[in-house]
Length: 108
Image (cartoon, rainbow, N blue to C red; front, side, top):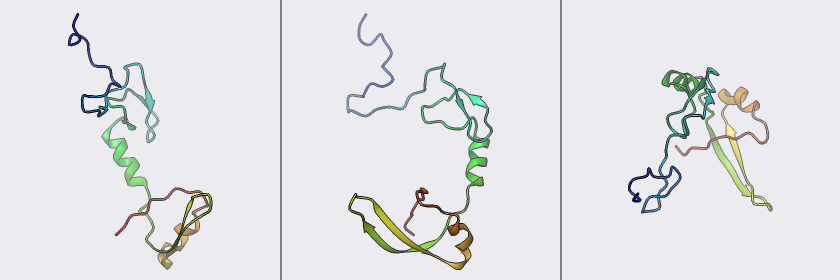
């Protein structure tokens, strides 16, 4: 048997060193975060059982807060703190944030 007779290993790197995404083993099942039903993913990074669940999950997310970064500092331990000022219309949503919440900051 030559080396071309066997299928490539799923985690093997290509000649250029890139790793390719491959389908998980057929026995692997996941639970859809939207509807909760178990499904067999077709890709290693697939999280939802279908496009309908993906869309429903992403439509249900809050629109996000708009604010102005007023101060950025680096602590002695290497953490970055960001002080953001929000408008009056976002007061209710901003008041529900708690220390440690993960938020996305996007430049506009």
